[in-house]
Length: 453
Image (cartoon, rainbow, N blue to C red):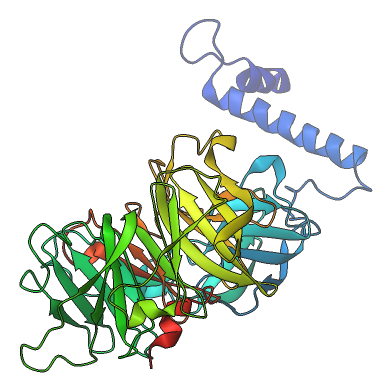
């Protein structure tokens, strides 16, 4: 009887209300059930390990690996493309957000498993010429990336102080080691900038340059002459002008230009290696021999054979394979003609903006040629770029694909005596008018400069 009452006191005792078990009864029942469950599990799995959470592992077999970079060590100024070499570099699904150079994401040209080619990046000035990091990271495994040390040289810089010049009209560069740059302005002044000393000198002014003349000088070039430092001007008139440019201006002695009559209005000029002068304007071409450096009335012989446009922007004489060629740029194309005495023969259009829909609304304002006969083009009206280059396959591409590297408002080009290409932006105010781009090549020879001693 006592045992029966004990069972009832444990399992059936009501404490809160009729029909409810006491808390003590519930606790004891739960403990018995828990013990039975443990005994059951132990019997069922007595030969198996206990259950644990799995450790997260990373598969690194597909991680990117950089083994080298081209060009090696440094992208010198003028290098347009950089290639990262390695394995597993093919980023999936077109994701390019995991490639960094100097902390910036470059513009990608091509991605393959074995290499990634990027266009030259725009870096902050404090990172040019310094050791920077190039990295490629697997976007699915952010913690696994490959790095390599590298350096990118400064592509160029704004030079000179032109705060006193409203607009730059014509430009020329001598062959001195310091590479002096000559510019003219609508105020009828001729300036020389000595980049070695960063000084600006006025060589001619409105006193020397007559009223109504030299207001809109379109071109100038060094050439032959008795002083062997003659500078020639084109002014859109039926004459050109010749003046002596001294290395040092003594007192107020300045040399008033001598006008040389041409049969028609001319706006562009250039010399060949013999000192022959070629001038043109509105489709009219003339040539005069080296006597233009000493004579006051040289003979200008008409030239025939040109078949290009009439709105001529610039001309340049280049020697290729032993022959002289005259490159002529109108507003929409560039023509290459072989010089044969007073004739231009085998004229061929080597640049045609109308054939490229992306460039069909652009206009050529200037051009240059490098030592390998590549053509640099200065184009107006493009929304992003001013400087382009004609590639070996004939296509026209931006010289730098990152539009923030170079000034956009460039309208004239002139190659210096070494590896400098000067980009002139007359629309920019103050010192920002001339940007000196450092390249990895020389320009085609400017024969007029060879007469400077």
